[in-house]
Image (cartoon, rainbow, N blue to C red; front, side):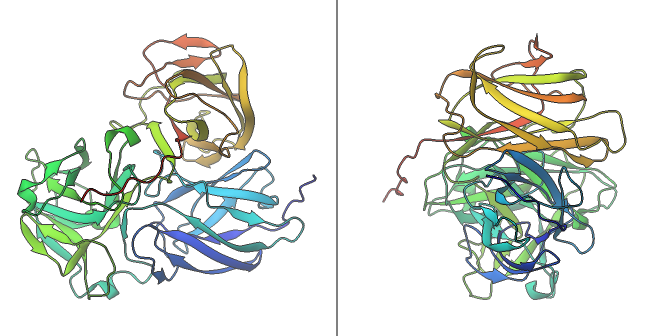
Length: 445
């Protein structure tokens, strides 16, 4: 079936912390309402942040495209594709971000459909999954109260789990004591009980974000990633995310952005300042569980800096241990030595082993050019690339020639450059897999 190209640049409205329910009348205009995924179910005005970066991948013909929010107006997407600036060909798309992007996590099952030959987008809904999502929108903090922040050095925000995993936690600060002092901000997930937070049990690793002496907290959103196998939750049970000052910090306190709870049920949970319950406040935070039915176990979570290259080549690959039943999505970064690398075509293929038998469909994607790097990503429908949990596989991508960064931590498997193994190295990439369709676990009691 022939795919006609939409003849104009599409500009899509999306949201940092929620989903997209959008009806586009034509390729030149976009109007829609936002609904927060996982928590509030509220409709809100369009919003977004210029820090947010997402990918939009075409599902049915293997074409990938990169997208990121524009600085002006904040929250709008400009789309880059192979035939710039013609926009998207007709087809189904999935919005997703993995560990190299900012706040939202992988989302594949909800789709955007562009009909053939019309140049119009049907009413569609693309959600980014969340256990908890409370972030102010395009109107800023006005609706949050006169002083939308609270000071302290230890906070807990309770939430109700919507999926079994945690893939990303984000928050916003208003200040740190001592403008020119460093702050190490810690994050962790806790199992709640009927007692105060000091009696709750930590059930995740501790992740930290370093805020340098010159960092102005209010203009940033600080997030940390987790792999799916690091945290296990029970749907419907109440948990808490803790944000606290690490003792190694020079700053003795910080101010957490918080929304006044007006009794409207905006969030399922509330803030604690140390052991003091503040049922009148909800923390500015985003807690992602990843798309329901997926796992993200090959991804960077420790040192996210891009430090070392593995070497320039036309073929780069990575062996990995499957934890799901089929491949859902991948992303990686590349460099060409140029300030703005070209939008290279990149072909992804999974094999049963290096140099072995191909498994499932290939996907051809085109990189999104950013400063000194390009980003490429691809998505597959469930079952397109079948996997057996516990087995090792090999994913390889080819390009006209580029360099790739190495991961700063060790994962099962090893990197390959032009078919040559690089023992003890892993490529800087993320892999998402579809998990078994297990029935939802009911909370105890």
